[in-house]
Image (cartoon, rainbow, N blue to C red; front, side, top):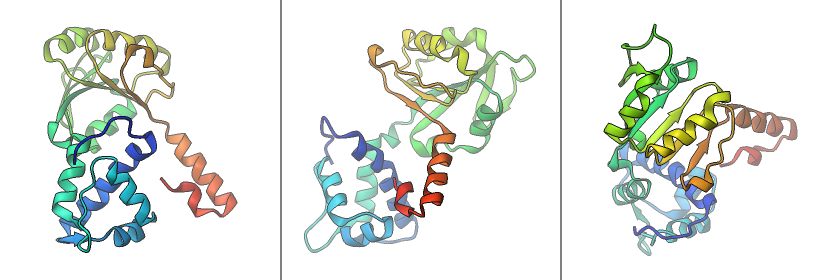
Length: 217
């Protein structure tokens, strides 16, 4: 599928969900699926799925549905999974260690090449795919290796200045776990602010309201 300009954020946020589900179909040996069957399995409508895919050119076939292998590859192409963008992580505290040990960056299209921390007791150690370096080496490393994305798991008070400095050294996107929203639109890079509490509070609302739809993606 061809990428289109000006695709809505709501559509973009559904693409990873499609990719996860279609990847499971492929792993289970399912050769094809209709938009109706896909919609029923995902709690969406067939019309919504067709509209979303049409934002990128569409790749269904009338009377046949979607070839699962081609659909999976098309969605992976949209998300840039095969590019394996270089990424670094800054802040090897509890969240940083958990991500390094348990999160599959490669499956999401990223090659985590290094991590940084100020704690001398962890510098030089390996966690998951990354070796931990002294944060004093951060900017020289970024200049030399040119990662595209930085994962921030530092204390929130230092996050804004750190983020702007990283952007100044060529970082093109931030995955932010600091608990402080970063808004760097003026610098022209995307920021994904992650708040675990938001998800849990939405679940709490849905439980109180008895409304399963409140947690739909």
